[in-house]
Structure formats: structure tokens, C-alpha cells
Image 1: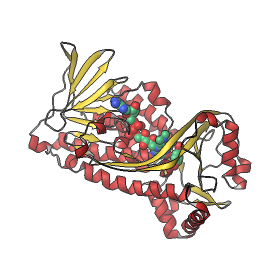
Image 2 (image 1 turned 90 degrees about the vertical axis):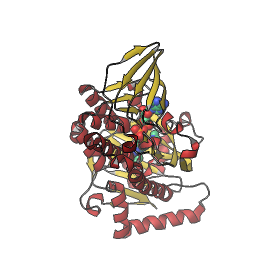
Image 3 (image 1 turned 120 degrees about the vertical axis):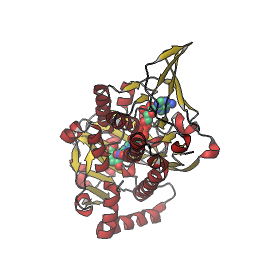
Image 4 (image 1 turned 45 degrees about the horizontal axis):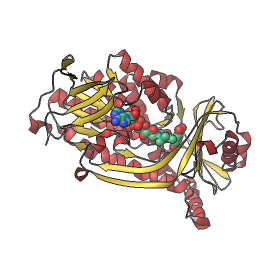
Length: 414
Ligand code: RFL
Ligand code: PHB
């Protein structure tokens, strides 16, 4: 049912009231999850004068301790500016004009800037993005409830949705116009939708990424993505003194199996000799293993519940698209909500799922393709390795193929 058909006007925001053992309050948009999707949406809504509350299962410190993405498309960077949280990113982030593809003992630069008509990406950690958005939210008086347990959206298929949660032993209920499910892949929002209303598409890859952070200068001023018979490797960074490196590893490996020495030996073996020789090593201060998965849930809207970011879709990190897709979802959702509150039109929110999914699937394809081209698969054999190297040779020698790679990597238009 469309919002117009439901004939609903935005709720007036009131003070919390107590009834029996439940604290009641009202807002316009209840946002579940304080990751980048939830915080970015919340800030854009706040800036537009649309009341919202963010409910997060974890503590703020826990959210800030998760090391994840590092590459922002221009669209995402622009949205941070629009949210009023882009100042530090512009001062401290590292604009990148290209990256290297390494294979068969050599490496080849992809000129992102030249091939994409002047675009570039920004290397700036997700932790910093989250920190800047949290700070902005605090400065602008936005309400975030951390350590909110048993968060549950209700009645989103009708005109009067609400969200319940518990905090410090007290039950809370937030009545709202809309619920934004920004609670990641394992969140409650998608799971609250009946199975019959949702279709999931999924591919699980037979390997993971072991990632480390170390206080050492990056081996190159640009990222290096490496295909090697021993497995994929990636040299990334957070600053010119902090490196973020990854190696493909078996899914059943444990972080304890990987001493720093073992990690440095392995990544050096997977890189061209000249790169390996100049790599500076040192003690890691973060080490974790992430599984790789492609996943899309369709649709992304269920009445007055909208899914955004990892709650609706996952990409393997090879194309650096996860965080950027969360941002494009927020772009479409925010524009739809603003239109609804400013003009009373539900056209934008009615079209949200279609618009978001059209972009999501293109990024899913790109991330799947980059993953297939760069990783070692258990059954690929010597023939599969040769085919990958032929594909990579074609990529770096054909302007058309390099242009397609660059266009996708810097981010397709919103
Ligand atoms: P998040 O960041 O998972 O945030 C969801 C939030 O919801 C909370 N939550 C709940 N809150 C209340 N009630 C519940 N029941 C809840 N359940 C969960 C969670 O605690 C959390 O705070 O999702 P969001 O906001 O959609 O953001 C998505 C991005 O975090 C993700 O796509 C990226 O990190 C993916 N990713 C990368 N993306 C890029 O664009 N570029 C990259 O370079 C890149 N590198 C990566 C990555 C992800 C990685 N890992 C660890 C999977 C590298 C890695 C290794
Ligand atoms: C990172 O810096 O964490 C990073 C960079 C590029 C990727 C994935 C992760 O494709």
C-alpha cells in the first residue's frame, strides 16, 4: 500500500511518556543500526528537519572498534559533505587516482582518473567515517540509543508502525511513520519480514580474507590487488604511516594460526619481487578473518519498513563496494523521505526499492567478477590460473577493458 493511500500525515514529535512499565515516545523515522548507513541517513534527515531516532545493539566504542572498509567513491564522499561530516575526510583522506593489478610476476597501473573522465576515489577508513558521523550527530542533538537490546519493528505493513526495545531492564516503544532497517547482514529488520515476502539470492565463496593493520608506511602510494597461484593479496592503507594488508586464506583458518611473521612471509610471496623487497614490516595491532559472500534480498521495501546497506545486500570486499552501496541506498531513501515530508508525495519512497536494486545488482556483478578474476578457487587448477592471467593481460592491454574496470571501481552514477 502506498503512503498516500494510507492517508497518513507525519507524526508530531512528543516527549517520552511512561505507561505501566513501558516508556513511550514518537518520532518520524526510527532507524535500526548505527553503522554508516544508519548514521548517514539519520544525519541527512536531521539536517532536513525530519525527526529520527537511531537504535544500536552495540556500544559506541564497539561500533568504532570494527575495522572494515577503506575506499570511498566520490558519491559517498559527497554525501559525507552534505551531512556536514566531511571536513576531516577532506583534510586527512587520501585521494587516489589509480591502483595496480599484479599478476604473473609483474604489475600494471589502472589509471582510474584518466580512464573515468576525471574521477578518483578517497582512501579514508570506515572507522573514521563512523566517528565523524557520530560526532556530527552529537553536535546536532540527534538521539542515538546504544546498547538497545531486543530491538523489534512491528506493524510495518500497516499505517502505524512502531519499534520496541529494552534498555537497562526498561521496555521502550517508539511510534513512527517509517522504520529504516540499517542493521547489517545479521540484523533483525530483514528477519522480521515473512519469508514469503522476500527473495534472497546468495553466493558463498570458499575462502576468506585475513586482514591486518600495522603502523608502517604502505608499500606503495596506491593500492595493489594481486592475483597469485598461492592466492589473492591486497595492499591498502589508512594513512601514509598505517598499512592495511589482506591475504586470501582458507575459511577454517583461525587468526591464532597466523603469526605476524607467517603473514609477512605469505604476502611477500604473493607480490611481485620488486614490491616484496621494499615492503616494510612490523607488529600488527589488528588481525581478523572475514568470510566472502554475495547476497541480495528483494525487494528492499515492505510497507513502511525500508532495508538499506548490508541489511539488504552483501558484496565480497574485492571491489570495495559495500560501504558505497550503503551510501547510494541512503541517497535514494533520503530523497524519497524528504520528498514525502516536504511535498506529501510518496513517489520517491514508492520507487526506492527499484532504484536501489538497479544499482546494487551492477555492483554485485562487478564485485563477483573482481573476486572471480583475482582469487584462487579450490577447483580451478593450472588451466583456470592461465585463464585468469589471460583475462588480466587483456584488462591491462585493452583501453576498453581498463575503462570498464575504472568506471565501475570509481562508482557508477546514482
Ligand atoms: P553495518 O556497518 O554492519 O552496521 C549495522 C549496524 O547495525 C547494528 N545492529 C543492530 N542494531 C540494533 N538491533 C539489532 N538487532 C542489530 N543488529 C545489528 C550493528 O551492530 C551495526 O552497528 O552495516 P551498514 O551501515 O549497512 O554498512 C555497511 C558496511 O559496513 C559494509 O558494507 C562495508 O564495511 C563492506 N566493506 C567495504 N566496503 C566498501 O565500500 N569499501 C571497502 O573498501 C570495504 N572493505 C568491507 C571491506 C567489509 C569487510 N568486512 C569485515 C566484511 C573490508 C572488509 C574486511
Ligand atoms: C581496505 O582498505 O580495507 C580495502 C581496500 C580495498 C578493498 C577492500 C578493502 O577492495
